[in-house]
Image 1 (cartoon, each protein chain N blue to C red):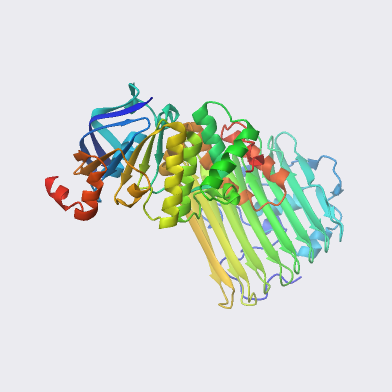
Image 2: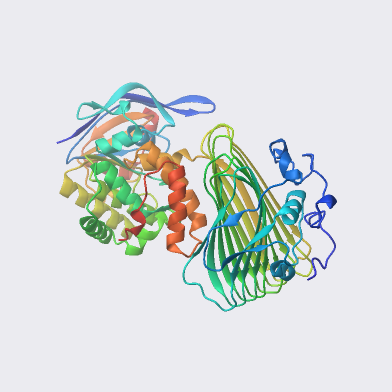
Length: 251
Length: 380
């Protein structure tokens, strides 16, 4: 049983022009086996929340706290956070030229698990995870994200999720740019991981479409850098029909 | 052999002669020398009483007296194009010759270990691949001593030659080398220069063709740190029709004062119709401090080409790549090493021989402080 606790989180983006506040007091708790959806309009700061949890150097936390099972996450480096059990499926995964997917996955698994996975079981594990996401085995020989289509990038993110088995996973707009078939495959992958590992999931999305495949326990509306309303799955239906207009004003 | 059939271009050598007295002593303002710290190499511009480099025994490798005429020089029409190469040509008392007989298919990589003596040395190396032959040769320079040298390579008609030219060793010695290659009709040449060692390395690889249909790849991977200076002056002389050239040089720089220079000159002469050429240099700055100069020059005397292009970029380490790898639990040091290693894989992937590629990668890993990376065997 794990808990990611975010309290009164304020964060700014650091650019050459200075610091611009984006997050303005976020309170959120993600627990094992639960799915928290965070929905919001463009520019509301929901992706910033994902990056701040993962520790992207572009952002600076000015107030508040993030803890994982009581441990201070903000005190950890990016890789320490991952090894502590946090995983961020990114909206725009970057290309790593000259690093094959198979090498990357094994290196990552070695780091997160604290020891190199046994080769024999590892190959089976990767094969099975890839098959579940309808990925061709040749995928493993390609360079990380290089020349991947939008759908391939997202599948690759979920493939990592299923191999890293984090305590808490943050999915940042995993649905964006996916056609319906790909969305279904990716969603099934997420549901399978949750079922098998009891991971807690923070699902960040602009659209309600993905919530038909990944059922949230709680829906949060994010606007103006904080959560402005919290409800059950039915809140997503309201957003589906009414859009974000009401919250844009409120923020 | 005719050297040129069209008028001299700005990119052609100014003086072509084996007589050192016909080459002026550089002052540092000349285009060819303006990047080089010539104050560190005055002895390379004077006649010295230096011994010749030698070589360890290997198949196809012989050492002969410089008094004998060179069949490789005759076949290629090579002549010195600057003072150090003229001095090396006229002063070296012996020639290291690597000769692959015509139609010989060498299954094993031929490893040539050059040997130098403490202090300064002159080097003359000749490599010839006979018609229809196929071979891969590794030339390992002795980086424990200074060398002023010349490599002349002749790839005869329809031969297929790969040469790995390796400067790996202590970061103390000075090396100035011309490497001139002539590619025959329908022949293939791949020259890969790996520069990891030496305090000052100035390497000038050039290619010209002696018939149509030849293909030349000139690849390079270099790592400079501390006070290392490395200069690569490439010249592709497209003097025959329907040939191709591809130049890819990639370098990673670190430390406070390292400095690299890449000059990519490509001349497409009027008669070189239907050719294809591309040259690229990428430099990765691992921290603030190092300097990377990069100057591509493409001169077209004919528009009747299949393709001609160049690209040059020097960039800082990509923080987004680092973040991505770290967010997967990979510690920062290893993440950096992975990115640098990956940066060079693009060049090394063009080398067909797996053990050879692995050996070069291992040397690069060692230089960047990486634990041996043997996961390539893992395939899913």
